[in-house]
Length: 566
Image (cartoon, rainbow, N blue to C red; front, side, top):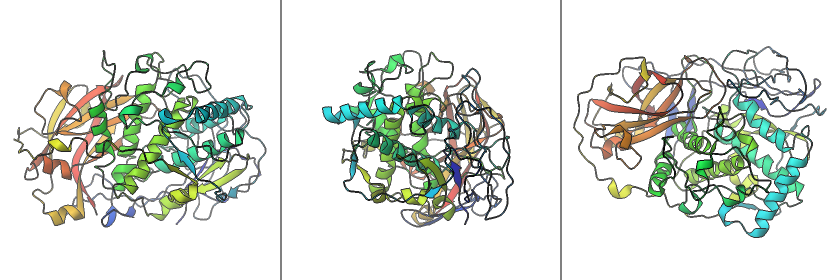
């Protein structure tokens, strides 16, 4: 099958480029227990209620070639069948939120005209990524010096701190045209299955550039260990105003000794997170998730009845962004907006922990990557530590041993969080009505969603994972959160991951604005939760949605129960 090519670096007009991008709308993969087929739209299969997707393909524009001070011109290209030569000059001015300072997120044109397929260097000594709060004095000094030298590089150098930050801006704010169009959707690495592999490669080259600047082949990017009680605060080394790791645009109310709140609701008076709540939140987002679709997010696709969707890994990560960003800035810069988050060195250690959780999900809890060729053959372009433009594929980054780094064996305190309270309880139906759609979520809303089947056998549950699906429309440039509870009868303001009824949270971090009617999907695995609640014999799933923050309310266009066929 054809591949997905996303240019992260500049190319001259004579660039020798041959790769392109296709996202088919049907995914097949292996789960930890069985072969899985996922279909993806809200239309009902009367027998199985299986997601079904449109088979229309989508071509992705490739890009670069604009200088840091260049004017911005749209460069359309024609989409053809495989193979195709695309116009490399498809990077344009980012689509930023209202009030954001205009910035040229596209990479500089430094005259490179060749793209080489990436070949892993010979690993002499494996790099070990450690928690920031456990670094030695020498490791801290090396980290600070490496960032200092990166900041000192010319802004036109693709290895510079400015250009490294701009990579994230370009791919989160519609800089790269999709299929030669300036209309949504453009190339994105959020709200779809590219989230985890894109950021893994992003960190890989960032780490190697830092190591090369201090001539240390064993330099490893440390991770912000916010899933462990000892690491649930912004590490001290990022808070020294004299340090290259410092960023002024952070939430002043969330500095140490305040703990991160992974269930942050942005309420007045919020000061510190709760260790138990944080551990439960991580377990719900990582250990309790079975299917790649719900862990990574869905296949990126252009319309055709399919909506982009984040996975639980990305949604958990979103809270870290929103919690850290400066609330006095209109757009939550730096960490609270995707176009600016790469300007904070904390961003890269935050994502190092996200990458670590991906490895834990696979190694500890039996999770598996997508096996779809269109996922594995997806490709990105990066400049390496030598300033050479290289093409990498998703498949290359799935085997950690090839990458030359690993994570230390830090304990996983959230593995069994909350399991002491998992004795099944028998819920009582409130006989709620179905939702009146579209539903404006400007207050707590409760309604019933019809289940296509109930009291399923163990064999049936082993074949199909029951999921609750919402089609959600909102202003993507706004930070938004709402919580989902099942069969909830308490005070909505007291709901938290400590409650058995808590199903999950939808969290958006400011990225490219888009029409409010361009919906995304939020899908939650509920088979195990229904068992814990003693609700598998209920005809309906009784849902309570609790809006937590957002300048404008979200709209729920649809809500239904479906199955991932496993």
